[in-house]
Image (cartoon, rainbow, N blue to C red):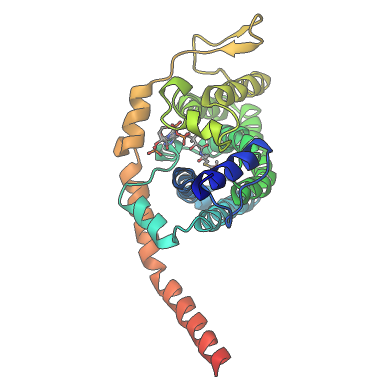
Length: 313
Ligand code: 3HC
């Protein structure tokens, strides 16, 4: 048996035995590349996702809401750094990942290309976007790549707080006056369908799902996770008297799931190809922040180099 085939057998055996693939393990180049793609895009999503919420930090209705939102945004930054570090274990440098984002060669979650127009959007983002992310990330806790799986365990613990604080904002608005309830309904109307798009195209149109399932990078398909999100979220909307903006939504007793309407995949394709409402603004803001932070990176590198020199003296 050739060395290459025995390495492949060793890798396949670990995947079959539900053992985690670790950075020092041999892995197929395509497996490594797929992970760099997905994990870096996950990290980009966490960081870009700070922008729509940061837009309301100075306008939060109370000091308590402001401090909760600040804590959430700080968590997202940490999730991004955690995931960049996990991606670097695959041999990709932080600079390469950030360049790919800035040059449009790497994606981030489509959802963050929509504007946050009112305070209710901050509730809808926490409730729906973090709610969808939790469904996806709980599944990813069982992904085959060790550093990614462990990052997910850590991140999921914080995401549940994110989802609860968002839903709590919606509960408060729906218990308020007519204008506040209308604000909550308007936010649900604008964020519902983009939240369903977060799970990606239908499995039949997914470019990566089949192989990602073989490698156990993905443990559930896009449609299965989307359905799980719909089934858990519709009752939450019912409880607070909000209407899901889907005329085709109805409980299917036979399936034991909600049937729901068709997703506008043309809108999805427009947004992920850079033509959503806020794509240019999001990238311009990220580039500006990255440039503004160049002096900090230079200072840390100079300090680290000096430390190294002193250690050698
Ligand atoms: N937004 C942007 N691009 C998307 C997308 C979305 N919602 N869904 C799919 N795509 C892209 C894929 O990246 C792929 O393009 P690429 O080849 O250029 O990377 C293409 O559409 C085909 O989609 P596939 O289903 O074949 O791609 P995947 O197998 O990668 O599945 C995914 C897509 C389910 C999003 C998967 O990548 C994934 O699970 N990613 C990790 C989870 C993630 O990134 N979640 C966003 C979290 S944001 C967050 O948590 C912040 C918090 O504040 C909420």
